[in-house]
Length: 443
Figure 1 (cartoon, rainbow, N blue to C red):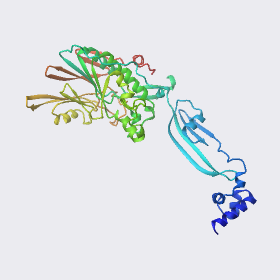
Figure 2: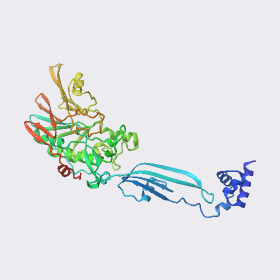
Figure 3: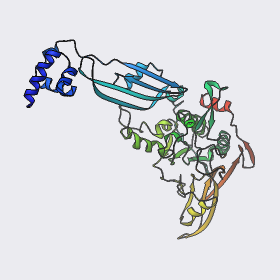
Figure 4: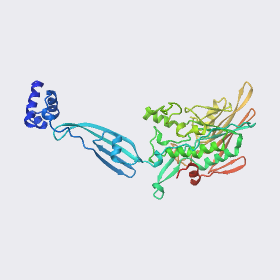
């Protein structure tokens, strides 16, 4: 039978029965086929006469379990409409959602388009969505008369970060457990203050942020999530800002480490449209989602050196990098020194190491040094790692002195928040009260 004949038969039977489903049963046709032939005939007076097609009703279902929620919306097309309809406060953050659409037959046999949105949410603390603002704009003021001798402070990996540990006795039901060592960091600030105006350069070796939630390689422990804002704030207000206030004349350099690189990798792999995004008023300056912007480095006159692997030359003598080599204890320095033609300082390995050798140059023998100043993060296993139960990590800081044509590299160990520098015993203040005063954050 031709399509035209089928369409005529469908139309006549529909005029008699008034139901697409009844016509389908009588002619052994699917309801969608009946609808197709009625549309094809262009004679749908009976179909068009009744009220307009019914709209799918909006329905929202919320299932909560602690700080997690699954929200399902029927008759809703977008995530934004779902969150509005669910009437959830701004502390709920969506980390995954699905959009579904399909066709179905309504009661009057009309084909309607249906929509569903399903969102998976977690409750984040208020600080997660509160912006971090620089406290003050700083500019380095070089000394008018430079000291005869110069010195530099080399600050290793602090891996600023937190775990949020459930604690019913604490405010908001959880407490903050830092991945960085506040007492060791305070030792470094005291050493910087003791070095005085001769301290002309400060180099932070990278991995100053841990950024575990940004990793695209490792699974993130739930206790590490929603901690980026607090981590950045404490690094900014608890270390970078005090360094600038203590050393207003010093050049401060922050090298990109493999942990800072996590931000760029996550953007490129999961949200590449955000890569290179800049302020719309100028389309210039730092990328919005970059370490420079997040830490407000420009406000402190701190120079960011990247990408990961880029080097900074100190006094034109010492090549400083975050580093990528990691050998068993004591062997990384030998690995760097083996092919070195200049002195080297690096981070990354979290160990205090130093080795020296003499090389032959056109001006005669020259002593070169390879050194790692350790770390400023916790060494008790609190930092996410793949090193087993025992970590052979050591805390410390590096000092470089320059006098005439001579350069000396020294390492200052820090243990249990205590360092000995220039014959003085320095005890770091890692108290929550001091940290709260410096950062303005409640822990």
